[in-house]
Length: 455
Image 1 (cartoon, rainbow, N blue to C red):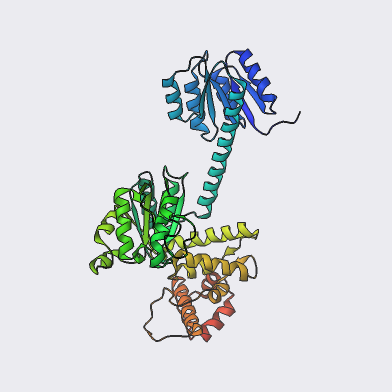
Image 2: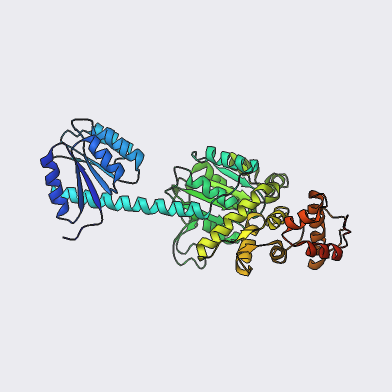
């Protein structure tokens, strides 16, 4: 007989009931395990790969409610169905609130039992797939940082995520505001519902209202079909409004009205619908200044900033740069089946001193370039400088005139070597070792850069 891939744990202190259930389930090619006490059931559940539990409500050593509670706490993705001849409405409600999938009464009808089993297994598989998707998403969009600045951000996310209040994310382009929005959503009770994104700057004003609220067929020229808006798509979940500072004043007024009432009306429709959506908005602009300039509604601003998280730029958390580099190198290597290279201390120091005006996004793009262009399994300073679009290394300069890339690179190299010389008390052997070059090469570079060795 071909075994079904699903394994069902049947628990009842009446051995004859277990045998009847086994016979029915095995006739449908399910694999069946039996337990005749709550303790035995829990032990089998914890040590085995179980896809579904059929659990008697009343047993000699405990109650099914207590066993189900332990099972759900340990493996919340495995559906549990309670079975009893003593079932009551109050017990069914208690079990459902606790997370039990369904509640069946004896005597069991074969078809009712099998329908419940199929539905429970399908539900369990869906929950597993959703869990894997969430884990994959969280891994792919993992936020990286151990600096005090990022620890404050993580702490705020942890506190804010469980509630449904609006959140305003502020910060420069590329700092990871979208990652913060994802972390808030996936850390909230809404995580099983959609996270819908809309970039307010990328949609023309004439289409933005339709994108947000949807439209009916024929509402305007080109509306050949009815369409849901992004707010309606996010019902039960989260709507992430990126670049909210680019919303027109008209769209701002309608967004505020929705936030206050929870009601939407499609363009061209008279029907009003209620939706339950959490709003997370982001901007790289100073919204306070926009309010003062009357280009952003004050009432909308105060509604959005119930909770505000300012994501720091990379230059304000330089200690995280090595972690970010390592993270993106690992990610690229995993995605492309490549060997993850090491980065020399000299290259790390150089990259940690760079301002990264494009922030985390620029670091990710840089790592992709490095992985494509690298010559071996180690990335050195000499490889890093040509691949980084050097505009403003974190080294002070009195020369405000525009320099060529060659001039900028030469100046940075000179300043960098001088700083390493100072750190090593102008000891050539130690400096050469720190720069990962031989001593004769160091002398040549110093002469070429106009640095006099202090012998």
